[in-house]
Image 1 (cartoon, rainbow, N blue to C red):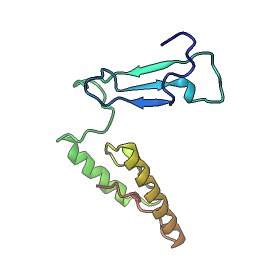
Image 2 (image 1 turned 90 degrees about the horizontal axis):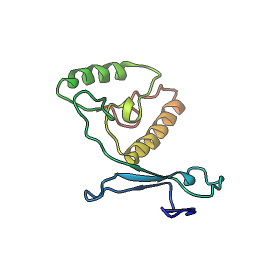
Image 3 (image 1 turned 120 degrees about the horizontal axis):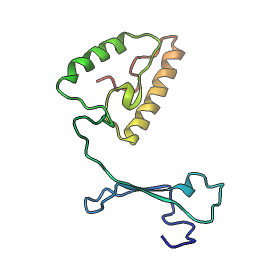
Image 4 (image 1 turned 180 degrees about the vertical axis):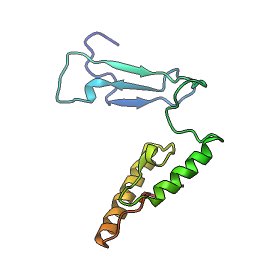
Length: 130
């Protein structure tokens, strides 16, 4: 980075999915608060790391032994009234953000329709209870 450079990439986050690039993304913090005008810029490169047996997972992993736990969770969640489960954690799935956003929009429409009909919302109104 050149000293005094005010904008290195023109956006807050740029992903680098190419296997030949050693980092996964670069965040440029000046774009997170555009109303501030610092004299330079700060770039943060993120590097992937393998997950070992003792490391906490970043996303739910459906391992063989977890299937029973997942089945119990889904049974209890479907039986719940007045509670909806959404997103990565609520549906115990890895989701890309575009899918998560689409399901949230579907869930909003489904919850609104349920409430208009005087019904409680479904446990998985976005379709993620599988």
